[in-house]
Length: 438
Image (cartoon, rainbow, N blue to C red; front, side, top):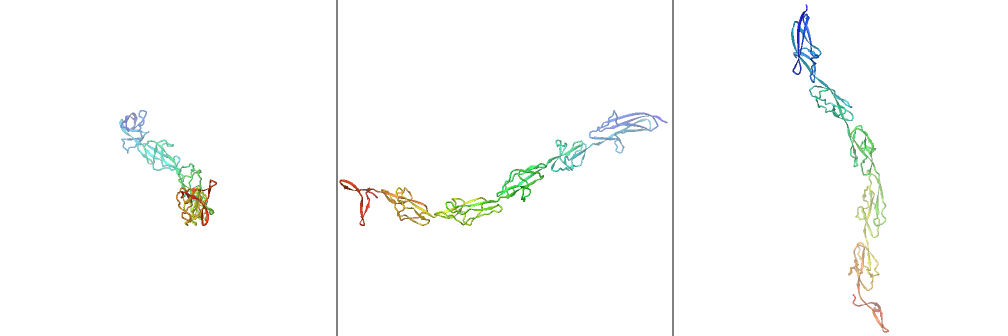
């Protein structure tokens, strides 16, 4: 038969902060034992327990792990077989929260798998990296546009929150180099960005004997792939090689008689740098009065640089000049204030010349001989002397002075000038009469 049973259930909850929360429930029951009393772990007077960074899993009596776990929405159960009071202690059972750290390739591929972070424990981010064509991976960022907090692969992540990390990228750049390919003055290298067209430089290299034809991807190309100023769209480091067209040149070797006549005909050669031809100096000779031809020179006043049969290689038009040696010289006579100078004489190189016996005349002067200076007072040469100087020369008459006395006769009481004669070999010879002369 049912009997009245008065029971009191005390439940003490041990919280994580070291304090207790107590519940007491009393019941009077007319019941046949056992009597069951259910005590909730939280109600309007006792809110559900919380702990930062943890999830409440439930409660376990006496914190003995073999005791059953009572869920957070369940109640403590007391069983009474008779009237009385029962007290039980329950301990909150906590589990650290975990967070999912996701990786977004942000336009790339092969993002690492998500990682799980435990509250209060640092997470080492994956060392795996995503890929993206034409880009360099820079790292991870909490913002998709890269303005948030940056992390490197393998870095420590300490944020206790579910987070998506976004890949940050930088466009690849490439170096486009220029090779003069046998020439010189190649342009400086240019930098090209992935996916963006590059305008090739207008600068051109140079090479003697060649015309620049453009740029090619091979150093053996015969035709150009690109011209200066063209658009280059390739993605990758590259070297562009100059393409050259051989210049065919026509050059002339000209012979200058250099004061003479009958210069040899000019010679013309057509050649390229790759097939350069040369000139053979002709055996024909120019002529020049009174001179001997010695050879040819690079300058009009130079000495002999080339002789017949020599080879001249020239990349431009060239003129060579006859070199002469004088072999006949003129010896001229100057009456030096007088008249009737003798005719000039011709002297051969290396052969002595006999000075003429011809004598100039000058009134009231005595011819004393010849000298190389017009101011000379003494003669250096006389008629019949040998002259050995190999050079054009002017000989000046040297004059002495004398006094002439006129001869007079008295005719009809007046003096009359007359000629004076001497008899030479039985013949009268007109002569001057000198007084005090030399």
